[in-house]
Image 1 (cartoon, rainbow, N blue to C red):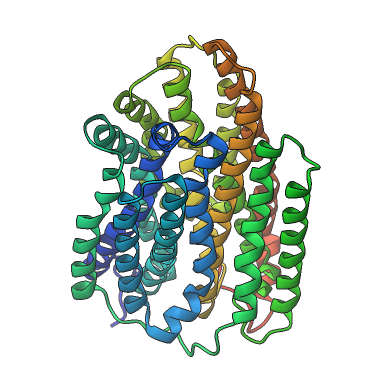
Image 2 (tube, rainbow, N blue to C red):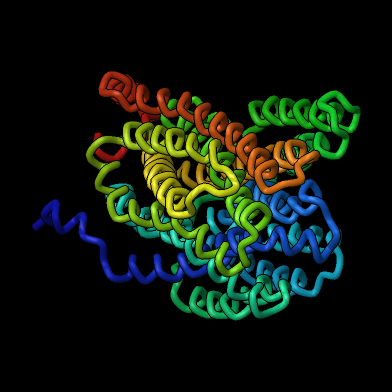
Length: 486
């Protein structure tokens, strides 16, 4: 007798066990980013580096993540998702230990790049494993739970970072990953299932070379604006121009290769394409602005690292508060409709931050950050769920790396741009009020980034409309799986 709809939608115990193991690995890599954000001021002082240089501790990590993520699909098919997941955690843990031993900003940045190379595949491989275990009907609810690391990290990371920096040397913000990494390896080896994601084919080495060089060049050019003091300096223009040219070469190559590193043909699916661009914008708005709040509290308000960590938490609380509702909201209204509400809240709540002064009420700032977190929480997971459920199961191994590449690339660009804006605006700032004005300028740019993200949100909303879905249904065997709530 066939199972009832309620029974078929029930999430079995083994799915929750796998989700728990995957979350442990994910939270390690995501937590590391938020801990470091609180430590940037300390790192800059101890390693004698300006914000335009020390921001590479964050940017280099994000770029390294983005560079290795594209090989995730091939590696998971070639070696199995479980094995790749284990190797990634081992490399990330080793990189964390080396970061803790660094003595200069240069060595720290190099080891962060190594750490990112190890951790870059943790999130997409984890999502890949969960997508296969959960199935499309339960994707929304399970992905909402798997999103917990991203929701918890903005709360726990700054607080943990503040506690560590208050009583220990900054190297412990990296050493803390080592015991977590060991536990994650042991549990993953015992509990994660083996996956068969199809034939791997040949690794697209040409595409990997083009992609791995184009992204860092663009971000490097953007970061040099702060050092050169000009948008037209050769060290700014040439890296950006060459990076864009290499990106165009990659797209040309990918369209003419049977098995490209990233299958950009997936963007012919309007739902996936719009969701991907939304993820890029959200990455820039989230990761870029995450360096501003702790720096404001430390440089303008003179707060200690532990107080700063606590004051950064409200944004994460807002994100976490939306987690239980994301799956149901996406299933009922569609990812596009939920995301456009979330991004609108994100934009509106960024406006007050552009008027924050040296003596603005901390309670008011915390309330604004909480609302901002609600907007972010309403944006990320519905967007990613819409993208994944708009594709066939055999396309997931290509889709998950692309979503993560765009999110990390957006974060790297957002971080570099806002760091440059902040440094240039603060060049002649001497008083707390003048420094606060510099942060206001950076937040106006953050608002612009968030506002641009509304454009792909509208496209996603239109792509999920009943008429657009009906057109896809009539497309024959290449039709994708309908989004949740269709």
